[in-house]
Image (cartoon, rainbow, N blue to C red; front, side, top):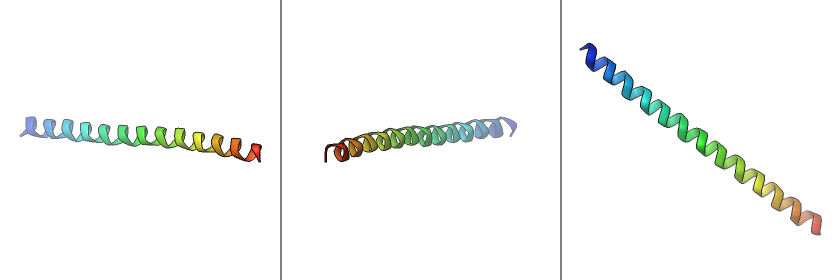
Length: 48
């Protein structure tokens, strides 16, 4: 029983780490996209 609980805890911690990691990666991609869009808009409005 104890071994089963430890294995379950490990798998839940692993899934939690995967979820947090994917959230962090998506946040980084969103930040990069926002910076790129901001630079593109600044370049467009400076020309006109």
